Length: 359
Image 1 (tube, one colour):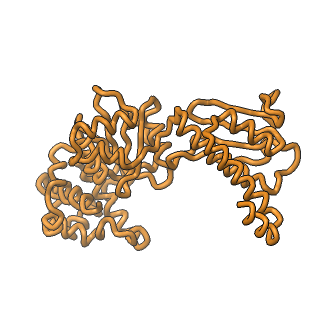
Image 2: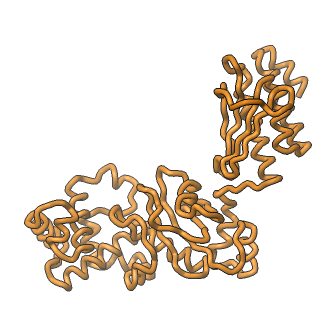
């Protein structure tokens, strides 16, 4: 390291200092120092007040360069860095320089954040929401024996006895750990991404607390492996109007998830809907979707959910005659009389099957 620092310092005067900072924190981590020791060492190295804050516990450490607790309220931070553990931001580290940030402050903060994450993981409690995907997969896999499942749940922090609730989540904007924290504000709650879908394990799930823009299916079975299967099915049947579904609400419609995809695609009603609405799940669907196609789906979904033209018109904020014209056009395209009870049932089943093809 020393030889490399000398050689590289000829190219960049800051390289030698950066490498020495890296070596400094490598030594601290090898010695397994705790958070107060990290803060004291960092304050001495930076020659300014250094802070460490953890979100989950509310713990804050501020140390002056002399190694003592920094007096008074925290001053403005001249530089900050997030502390990340298991892909979740669990805290922040910062420097409180009276002047501008130093040329090596970014390196120092980056290494301090890594060291803090290691110390929290070692000494705990980490209180992270994001968990090891391998452990979560052991909990929800149908191939896991009960002893291994129970052990995985214990390692994740769940007590034996009460059933663990399972939710399948798609959250394009909000991080999964934040979704988990909102829907289950009390501990424990753990989350991971498996196969492109978010998994939330929690002691309880409040469906009313799912944020806008998030879609979720909630399993209702007591066994996590069965609840995960139910949650995936419910997630596949969510819509913009019903972004969160309990599997228990699906009733007999859940049986369609057991039908092979090729059978669903081969059904005339489903095939007709695919021609009208396009193949679900296509990554280019959103880009090429026309306003007419969106109106067709919105109208059919509202009509199937409401069961009458007038109630659908209220949902869509349209005159009932406008909805009637749309339903007539959709019925012709599907070759189904949507104004009859049989036609409405066929449309509901076809729409459900069409959604299932999208996963």
